[in-house]
Amino acid sequence: MKQFLNDRLPFDGVMAHLRKPLPKHINLLFSLGSLAMFLLLLQAATGAFLALSYTPSPDHAYNAVKYISEEVPFGKFVRGLHHWGASAMVIIVFLHLLRVVLYGSYKAPRELTWVFGVLLLLVTLGFGFTGYLLPWDEKAYWATKVGVEISGKAPILGEWVAKILRGGAEVGAVTLSRFYALHTIWLPWMAFALVGIHLFFVRYYGSSGKPNNTAEEMHSGKPFFPDQVFEDVVGMLILFVVLACAALFAPVPLEDVADPTNADYDPRPEWYFLFLFQLLKYFKGPFEILGTFVIPTVGMLLLLFLPFLDRGERKVLWKRPIAMTVTSLCVVAIVGLTILGAASPKRETQEVEQPSQEVQQIPSPEETDTSEEEEDVFDFELTEDELKLPDEEE
Amino acid sequence: MSDNGRRSFFQIATAFIGGLMSLAAGIPLIGFAISPAWKKEETQWVDLGFVDNLKNSRFRKVNYAFTAQDGWVKATKKRSVYVTDLGNGEWSVFSRTCSHLGCLVRWEESEDSFLCPCHGAVFDKDGAVVAGPPPKPLQKLEVKVDNGLLFVKEA
Image 1 (cartoon, each protein chain N blue to C red):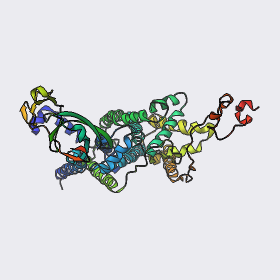
Image 2 (cartoon, rainbow over the protein chains, first blue to last red; image 1 turned 45 degrees about the horizontal axis):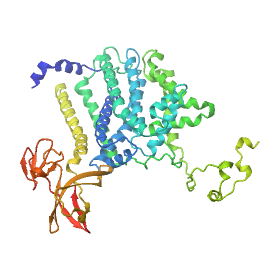
Image 3 (spheres, each protein chain N blue to C red; image 1 turned 180 degrees about the vertical axis):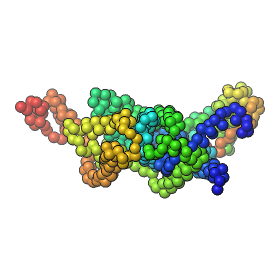
C-alpha cells in the first residue's frame, strides 16, 4: 500500500520537507499557531454538526438552540465545545500574535505572513460577532444591535454598511439569515483560504526562530516532523481536555428569547469585545466617533501594516524600547479595558411596569364636534388649549 | 534513547493522541448527528370525526390534521386515510402511504384495489400486495371509538 501511494503521490518529497530541521531554541510559544489551526478545525467540525439542528429564523432559532442543549444526545457537549472553543480561539490567536511581536517574527522577509495572520485575526473576530447572534436570545439580539450600530457610526459609508449587515432598517429575520450565512459559509471559506496562504508562507520562509539565533542555528534544530508535531499534538490534547471539561461542567449561557421591547435588559457583548464596549464610554458627544471608528480603525491599520512601519533590526522585544512600550501599552489597554468592562456594574433599576396603552390620537376639533353618541366614547373633555397644536400656542 | 527510537516514539505517540482526540470528539459528534435514528417516536390518538358521519363508509377518503412536536417546532401535520365501516362497531382504516416508497395510493372502485401512481403497486381491498414492488402490505392503523368519535393511532 505504501509503495502504491509512493508511486503515485509525492509522499517522499512532502516527508522530506516536513523533516527539515527547524531553528534551534524553538519553545512552546511556537506551538500557538498549530493550536489556533486545531481550534479552527474543531470549530468547523462542531459548527457543521450544530447546523444539522438549527434554523436561522427568529421564530425558530432560540427553540432550536434550546432543543440542541436540552434534547439532542451530546447536544450540550457539542454546543459547549463550540462555545468555549470560540473563546479559546480568540485567546490563542491573540497569544500567537503576541509571540510574533515578541520575537519580531513579522520583520522581513515575513511581512506577508504577518498581514495574512492579521486578516485571520479579523476573521476570527468576525466569527465571534456573527456567531453570537445565532441563539437569538437577549444577549444575541442586543449585542448585535449595538455592534451593528457601531459600524453605522463610521463616516460616509457607516449607515450603508449597517444596513447591509442588518439587511434592513433593524435587526430581524434578514439579519439572522445574513449572519448565519456569514458565519457558516462566507467566513469559513475566507478563513480556510487565508490559512492556506498563511501556512504556505510559514512553510516557504520557514520558522522565524528566535531573533538571536545565528545563521547556523537557523537550520540545526529538531525536525518539524515528528518532534515539533508531537509537541503541538500534546498541546492540542491539553487544550481539548480543558475545552471538554468546560463543555461538560460549565453551563453554556442561553438567556431569555430576544425581546426588542425589553428595556430592562442591560446589553453586554461577549468578553472579547468588552474592551471596545468599555472604550465607547470614554468618548462623549462629538468625540463619540473616536471610540466607535477612529481608534479601532487606526489600531487595526497600524497592526496590519506593522512590518512596514517597524523596519528596524530584528531583536527580541525588550531590546526594542519603542516596540516594547507600544506593545505593552496596547496589551495593558486591551486587558485593562476588558477587565473594566467585565467589572462595570449592570443597571439594577427596572422600568416601572405600566399598563400598555394603545396610541391614542388627539382628535381634531372637527372630529370632536360630532354626535352625542360619539362624544361618549371619550371619558374626558378636551379644553380649547389642549386642542391647540404646539406651534399654535405662541 | 537513540534519535531514531525517540522519533519512532514521537510518531506513534502523535498517532495515538490524534486518534484519541478524534474518538473523543468524533463519538459525540456522530452521536449528535445520528441520534434521530434511535429516538423513540411518540404516538397519539387523533380523531377522524364522529362515527355517525362515517357510518356505512367504504374506502372513504378522510384528510385530517394534528399537531405534534417536530424537533423544536410544534408542527401541524396532515394525513390522509381510507376509512371503511365494517359494521358491528368495527372499523378499518388504511394509511394512504404506499409501503414501497411513500407515495399516496388511490382507491379505484372499478378495480376494487388500491393503486400507487409512482411505481405501479397494486394492493387489494385488504391491503395485501397484488402487484408491483412493495415489500409489505398497506399499513392498517390502530383505531378506537371514544365518545362517539373515531380515533386512529398516529406516530
